[in-house]
Image 1 (cartoon, one colour):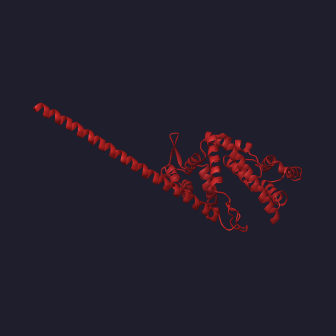
Image 2: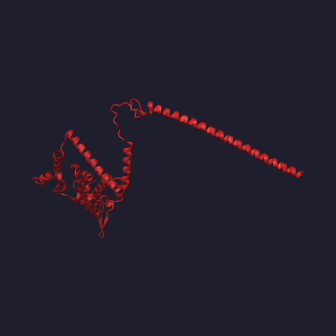
Image 3: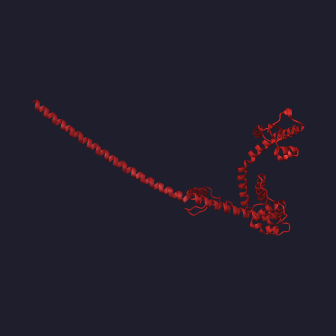
Length: 330
């Protein structure tokens, strides 16, 4: 916003930043605003400059910010409101600066981090500090960047530190030197064969790291370890590798007679033995059936004789009773 206003009218920016262009007059020793009818040419010029500055601010802010600043009469008051909204009060500014300074002091290069990523993170920190009024010279930034690099950059850091232009080296020049060293010496381009070997090595390292992470997770969580163990058993049991069918198929061999060309269930010798066993069982069943019928017949005869004897006994008893009755009548 500052650049937008300055590019259109620098006098308007001076009004926004410093000036109160409201015309005043002194009445009984008291400073009071002039009426519009009392404005002279200088007062009209100042009021017009304030209106131009307000117009620039209205054009630059969004609807939410417009509602916040529309109640003010001067461009300077509107600018102060926007500063408090986005930067905070002096206490908030100090807190933000302290937080960014803490990040600046603890900033360091990560292992295998590229120069582009390294400078991008560092630029975000120093840009935020610069916005809040904390500025650093190029020499301070160069020293900080070289001091926070990893050991693989040790030789290049020493070469730059011992160079003649170390004290006059700028931030952007240092970035260019480090990028050149990264692409030409530290990580040079490789051919296709080397890429394949590097890829295999990296995949093995990733597998080892993932295996270590899984083992650490399972040690911390025994229930998870049990689930993983059962899942591995299930996979081994149900997803067995396919057998190689490229081998020549051999004819079946019978494990009963030892001949080739048929299996045991279809062996003729086994069938003959089964027929013999069936005939033996049939003969035994017939003999058992005959014996059972004869025993049943004998049982029937005994029952009939018993019934006859019982009938005779009943008849005798009835005759005796009849004789006794006849005697009593006589």
